[in-house]
Image (cartoon, rainbow, N blue to C red; front, side, top):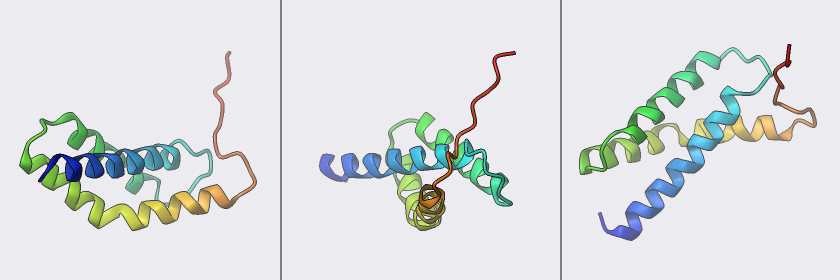
Length: 91
């Protein structure tokens, strides 16, 4: 993989990671919450590992397998006019 391909891969991965964080941190209760938390943990594991060909392949496979589902869920959250983030009380 050349440097440009790796840069594009990590840019796509970062975008998906940000979308996953938004979904997981959403105050809207959804029945797939565990699924998206698991996906976020997997992304954290992949990003925390060494930058080797094997790990880049894992990231690429993850993106190919889950990107459409993550992006659709993210878009559904963004289409609502309601603020999807909850603020913690300062008690």
